[in-house]
Length: 310
Image 1: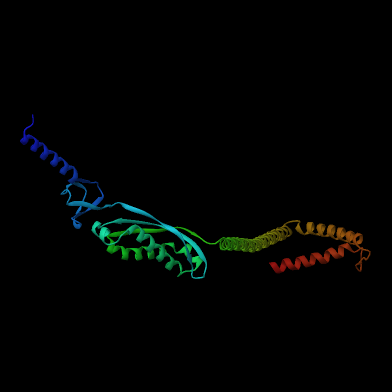
Image 2 (image 1 turned 180 degrees about the vertical axis):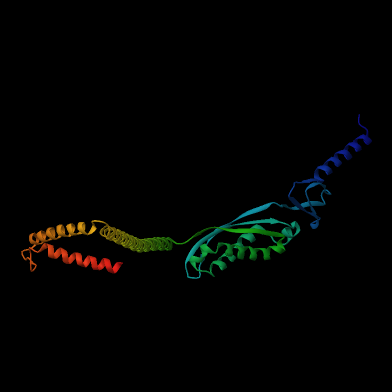
């Protein structure tokens, strides 16, 4: 049978177990808890094991310190050139001060999303439709700066913001596609004309080089022909001079004049016969039968020349 003292000890033990169960708190890694004591902020619990005072302390807020991804709903924005486009995005942020996140704002995720939408409408309204696709980085930076300034009092850091989609109206999309098609056709036409132009330039350069090469070839050919003619004339003249010298030497030798007389007589008779065959007109010497006289005249001329040479 239990004594009153034993019962009291058991009651105290049970009370201690209840106190430990109610007061023991384990905070996970990359998390934080805000402890309130009797409704007033007491302390911030970091990752690890903690003991609270039961019925006095309580964890009023718990925050994950991991990076949060928040979808920004699609909304209609009007560009500078009065075109309505549908834009949505995504925000990446994290809680850096749990106390400010708990007491600085009621819902920092919703606040960041709403502020991103209003800033995005303002940024889109400053640029034309064509620029919205080109200046995404600028728009993202403007939204981040606006949210980050407001989020400083929330204990939240905005890491980045990205526009997911920009959807123009169907009519504008068709016009943009037509414009892109025209631009591609224009670039294709320019490329084709440049190709034709370059081809014509290459052909003209080739024709020019061809004419230059032909002219150089002709000049070289004329030079070679002229050199060949000059060489031929020189060789003929040299051979003729050598023949004349040989004939002169032969005439000076024994029996040379008699041989020359005989040769002149043969040439006279042959040429006179050819003259009669080649034309109807015949030039007759004053004394056709006097061949000896003609030869004597020629021989006297030879002797005179020979005497002058000596």
